[in-house]
Image (cartoon, rainbow, N blue to C red; front, side):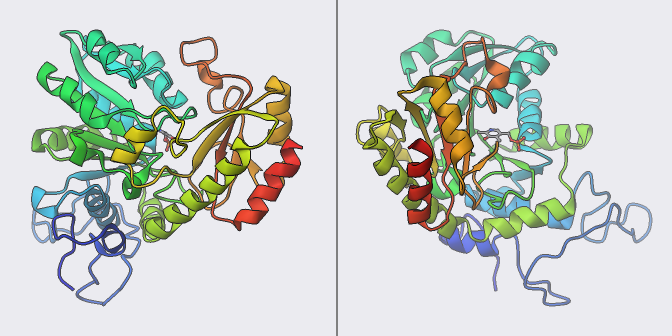
Length: 391
Ligand SMILES: *Cc1c(COP(=O)(O)O)cnc(C)c1O
């Protein structure tokens, strides 16, 4: 089979299974092997057989994943290798920030960013000299007003975690471009199956591949995809210099997960829609956050930039924090755990778990909020489980 990449007009499900993964010409392996090696024999000094020298710089299993990730985000292989796989989502974020910014620069962050992202900027990158302002990304006037002559990067997450707010990716790109800032979109919640930020004007897409791309809660990983060769070069240099690379086994697990991305995402969306319909009618539930709901403030925007609204749902309870904690501790199929995006349904209390690190800051989340990562189990079992837990 000929090369399949993001420029060949193939559908996302085809790219997920084939991009970067041609059958091995020597052995015919249909699946890319786990190249569990740190170094590569050279034919004479500097005579690399296929470009590989040392596995911090590159490894064939990682290359396959990187080419596949780039294709999923709509990038062709003709644009050189434009995807980078990382040891975790935060490792990708750290390299993106340091590659695009200098000490003394300024960054805009969403005022409801993923807690780990906020901690990275507030507790690590600030010490390195990178300042930030947290803004409501849904308000483009507020974003434009917060841009300074040192702003080098606008960090966008959409939909956001855990409030499921939606930001206008093309609107943000239109603010970033004239001010010389790069727009980075954390596409973890949507996955490339539901949303492709590069086509909407983003400069860099980052992922925690731990979530929907890996999809099975069995691996931690990250990714960054960009098209500007200067940006890609800076990302590669920084990643190789600091060494935040994933091992071959982890790359293989993410690649394997990606093959079923399309069918999983459709089922995540189907099940989330059913859960949302049940919660919206439940007397103990005060409000439901889901961009697929017609009365969600970001509904029209989500419909214009996302294929469907995704598998993440959050809701508030009339009974306050006690009620939220009780629901989180009473489900039998939804597992009480951090993380998201795997085949199994998860439930958590953001204020005390994923977002505990932002308590007392502008990013604090309501204590009566429960977050669900709706999995792909039988939907009636999920509905019955939530009904019994909410009571
Ligand atoms: C999990 C997550 C991250 C961090 O990724 P890790 O793989 O845990 O380092 C970043 N952004 C979002 C939206 C996430 O959900």
